[in-house]
Length: 134
Image (cartoon, rainbow, N blue to C red; front, side, top):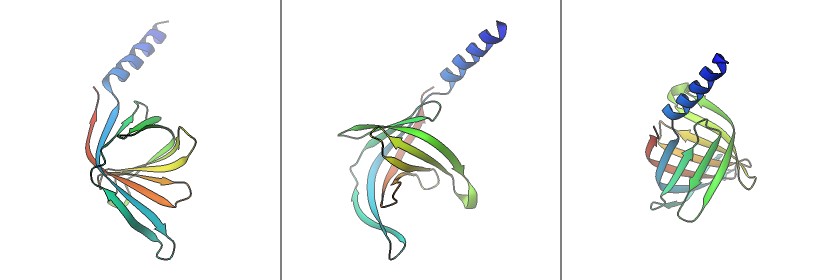
């Protein structure tokens, strides 16, 4: 019984101490995959695109809010890549309508990128600010 109470208290305090993680963005860039050059081709930029990402405590869900819509994503897996000076988190995610993406949270280059599983396009959001709830 004491172990159950201690475990419940531990779970409560870790939930209170480690809040949600938030990211605000201030620009959106769109790219398409160019097979002939084997590289991303810039398509457009919206420097006024303000959006918010909100990760839950366990990094199993993320909510993306734009001026026109809110989308939810289930995080199926995640990896942290620090090789060659990178500092990126790679997430395999599924949207609330069933679309699959790779989402890259790139700390070193200060952006979040979405790439659909067919690798045809990429959306890059420039990060304005990050913070956590405490």
